[in-house]
Image 1 (cartoon, rainbow, N blue to C red):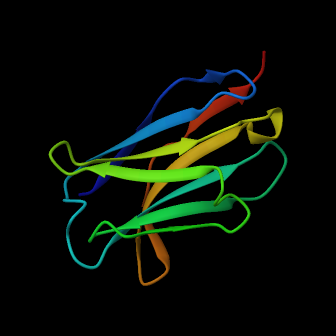
Image 2: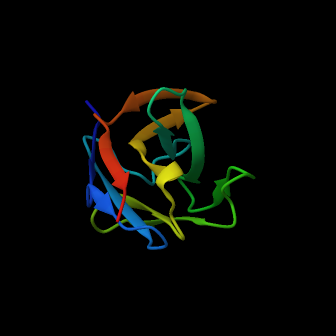
Length: 118
């Protein structure tokens, strides 16, 4: 069974870069035709899809976050990562990684709280 686990700092200062990693077990991130997404949920708000890296390494980002977001992967470690630059307190959220196929999110990590504060 595929499992995903987010990791990274829980506290980031404004203007810095938020970096998170998702470690995948039970399945390869290069398996056709899966894709691997980052999704967040700010306090009191709904889920926001941030971007995705596909099995072939191609990436797609939310237009509203594209200028600040980068998703990459390390196939040797079966991990994919998120970087969000120039963060503000509005980027405070629970961040999730998820496996996607045919636009459906079929597996999720447990989520990790990231707070942006000085």
